[in-house]
Image 1 (cartoon, one colour):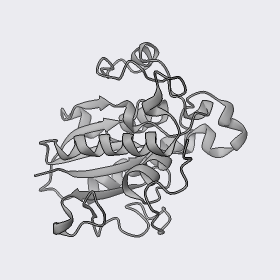
Image 2 (spheres, helix red, strand yellow):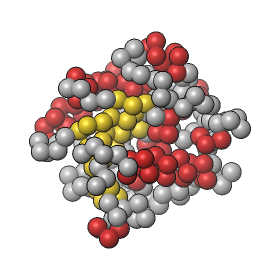
Image 3 (tube, one colour):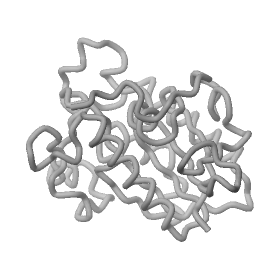
Image 4 (spheres, helix red, strand yellow):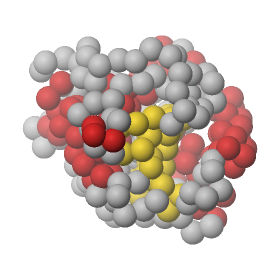
Length: 229
């Protein structure tokens, strides 16, 4: 049976404050973002069902996602839940703020994480070699389908994924995410009540404005607004 997945958008980072900061490479969280992580941490500990067990954390390898993971989910990591950085969960765009940092540098900055499984192409998303991560409708949707397909094969009870608003919204679940907000989905077939071809069924806990109550309610069509090439 596929796992339940908790999708989390990273907390506020420097580029979220001012579009002028979009020129900054792979920005860090702000002070507010770090506080958002602490608020998310407390909320998850209080609201996740005690009979369900988080057994894996997957994170985008971008700094803001890693920092969110290590702060908001430290209680799970301290309990032995493994963390896997996965390039497929990085943000969409080729702007500097949405382009990651090489694995060798990340390994120095975050020595508690193992970056050896990370796609060696990372953080390239513009060359021919990085075609799987380019900002085009075909590439983004293929990346989303690949990431979801792997989740469906996971044996864990609950998996947490820390990612980005654009990718989660346009390539995975068709929902909006505010900074440090989350949504919980069961992965099941359409015959089990799924809302689309991937059978993603959102928990009542997070429907509408998300688990923290800060996200936009509107649903979007996966793939909508992505460039054809």
